[in-house]
Length: 126
Image (cartoon, rainbow, N blue to C red; front, side, top):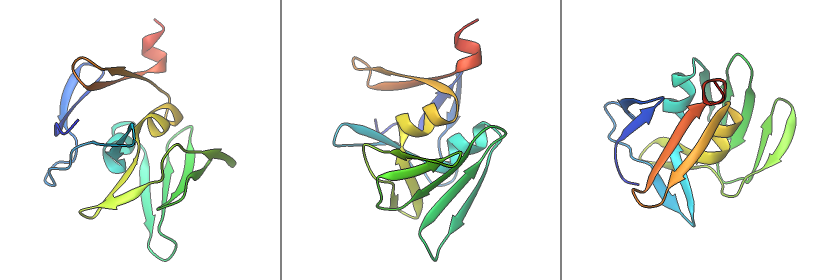
């Protein structure tokens, strides 16, 4: 945690170019700035300031999360989160495992190196 670089399917990227945002570990859950992972899979993200809601859309997933709430709506169905989304330095931070799995990734944690791994499910089963 705290590293500003991210590996996606073996390639290294800066998580939040120009902002220096790093993942955070809070109460045992990792949080990641939402824009990076959403855009990495070709998705769109919209911020609704009046309701403090983030909307994500990809080819297969539509998701709505509200800052401070532990319930998300994924493809029209409510799902419970372990931790609530929050804002840090103007960046929306979402629970990493939930977001990754909802977007179709296998998510792994290496306790020795404190690294989170993501692999697209379609690639992890080849």
